[in-house]
Length: 482
Image (cartoon, rainbow, N blue to C red; front, side, top):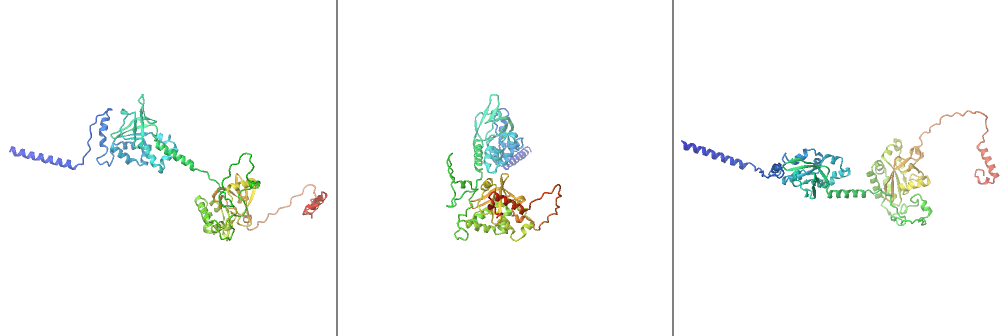
């Protein structure tokens, strides 16, 4: 009986061994942890466990990873920048290949100490590459704890080298930043050191300086419209500098002229078949400029949809005329009443009064009112003229309550059409009078006090004046006396 029992036990043991072997074959292979001796104390166990961070396929990160510790640590500003730069996958791949050392600046260095202009530069979507380079400059593809701090230059994940230095008193530095919290976070796959400031690589600094220089160069102040030579129809070249004490280049009258000449247009007159100017394209460009400029949509709508003024203006410019448009903004157009727009032809008449058949810029009109005080400009609504004067350092059009200031100068200037923005709608004097005359209130004669003095009537006063003029021999010069 002993031999059969021993055989049964042996067969049962072989069956158990075969089942265990099958289970081991079906289970996925787990990475082994090599036993590495620690050179700096207890870090040997940490380094030995680094291989367990990433699984065999490299698809995920262990919960004990240094990346998880970075996202959960008090270095929240750096963690947010890493997420905005889309670097999580890159850092996961780096951790899967080797240990890393991360230099994390404190939150105050990123919130208050960082230049606001440089921070805006980093957060712009077009500068994503610079942000990624800056963040990868804080990561070393090797493990450097405080116990084995190497004083040498080491490559970073950005491709640039960073200088590590150690002081005699045990202090540690990374480039120009001091390590304030060495070994702030220790994990099997890496270590995090807290530093006092942000590390900026040379390439990112040069890119920032280049963008800032381009922004400064592109901010060019707007200039006035180009001057066109009426004889050659070409742009005038800037005059050479005049030496001190030299005689004036222009005659006195040209030097005192208020602006562009009031002479007829240099192009062919109305009715001529040779149109040297494409007026319709120019009018289309200036209307599109009004819409893109903003605040003048009502005027553009009236020119294109409610009236045929755009076509008429294009025909005038094609035939050689020049125009200056005083453009009321949307707020001014909204103040027009229904009575002012209900009569037939009212929109056309209102806009005709805002069109000057001259080419004037803000500079020429302001120089004119500065020299002459008051300037009257012809309008397309004959025979009405618009009066301009200087007020508060600008040009003021009209009189009384219906006046308007020039506050958007040179919206569009191409040498043929000039558009100047104003803040009110100009109306001629006859349009401002009420429809029904208002009866004057009854006035009582003033009470007479004291001695009554005789007053000369107009005829007697004129007779006395003529008699006095005859004494001095000037009677014949007065038309009223004749």
